[in-house]
Length: 299
Image (tube, rainbow, N blue to C red):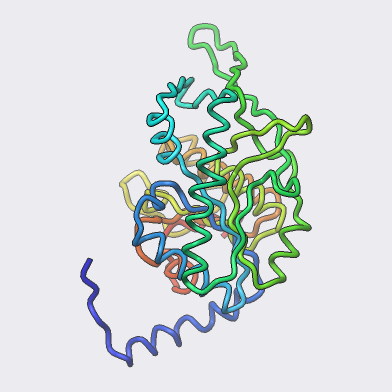
């Protein structure tokens, strides 16, 4: 990728324009979820790591949560472990959850830790099992029968959802110079390991921290209107309306619903941003128009 150089004067102007946002967000908790598709690009993850270190150095408290769907799928294929799906959701048995934990809490988590360390940050890699950070429970999922409209409960195996977050641990890390990088693996009351959707885990952590921002870095530009244009800002009422009208559809629905749930439970605002765009994080936080879709309870 060719980078067009800018003049020193332009660089200085960019920094000056960012100053009001630095002041505004200093000391704030930012929960940032990075997806597995972004982590497949070494250049993007290196840029992301530098951006995270910058946030920490200027006084923002970043908490990084990561996914790893493509990497998990690749490992399962490599080990010739077949996956079964119901309504697009992977059934996770004990063998599968062991692989999920190995990939998420092992390979991917430590790769991000190494990148942030290399960028100059002090960083620690965790899973939700460490110190019972994410207390999980089995996720209940239902499917409506088309003819009868009766809802059947589906057993997805060891797919979980957060029951409680130990925010005390996160606050201690936030007050230090350490950047936490968290794999979305939870621990049940019975000691069982659960695989948790990374967006869902990030939303629960943002709620527990009353985060200034929940940022979901994904592989889309943001929430779009009926004409396909990215909406720079959206309130909760409009988001519900667009879902009902099926303008927000497909995989965007659970992302928006995660944002709305986080807002209902204490987060101040949520953003869906394109993680494929270099420095999307900085563009979203330190520029007037941002880089994705900002969702608030009210606008």
